[in-house]
Amino acid sequence: MKTRVFLVAALMLAALSLSPKTFAADITVSDAWARATPPKAKSAAAYLGLKNNSGEADQLIAVKSAIAKKTQIHRTSMENGIMKMGRVEGIDVPAGGMAMLKPGGHHVMFMGLKQQLKEGSHFPLTLVFAKAGEVTAMVKVMKPGGMGHHHHH
Image (cartoon, rainbow, N blue to C red):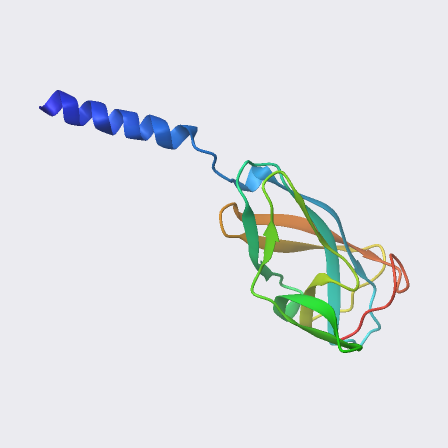
């Protein structure tokens, strides 16, 4: 009897190790950038690409940064011809697929900036995924008009 229980447990462990799991190494962050801000700016946004190299869908569920009092996932959308911006609970990153955070769409919002974002500088941003856990990326600060149209909250 003990041998059978041990065998079942061993088979279950083997099956678990074969199922696809998403780890931080499975998420690749590309082209993370933010625009430089004026000296007294209170908010800024960051944009980036997320690639899920695993066989399992994941979701970006939170963002953290020391540069602001609050860091959140936001989305810009058009409703009845009016541009609206607001917080979202998460962004799906499909298995083997991409999610793009870009001007006019999903973005990372920094509110209550603690410092001016200066062109040419970098700062760390921690992305929290439901399955992969935490992934830290370096965000490059571009010139104020760089990489697409302007975006303010």
